[in-house]
Image 1: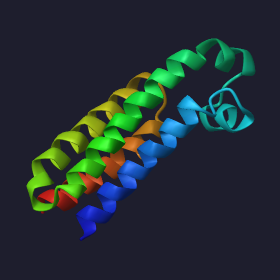
Image 2: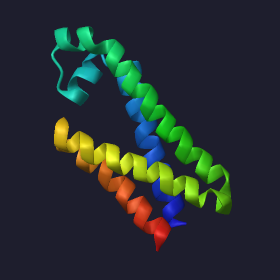
Image 3: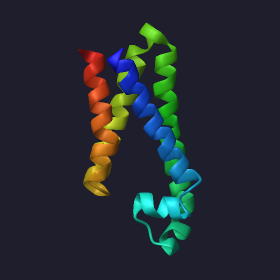
Image 4: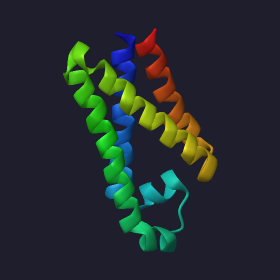
Length: 115
């Protein structure tokens, strides 16, 4: 039960990131969430939308794993590992905040799933 809740939380985080990157990047909300200058946000909006789409795929994979039930455990492990790796990479290359927002929830869900 705990693993299901945590996987759902990770999926919702990634759906929220999708919305921020695809639709709100070039707004005050997006600027504040990612600490962006308006000119930078305007110039990078297409790249951000691409990133948002990938986050949506991660969320879709996690939700699919839940829909599969017991048969979806391996799918959950795969997508949680992807989120964890992406979160660590993002923390090293972009912002330490990503470690806490993305990687740690994925790690918690992965541990709950494996225990």
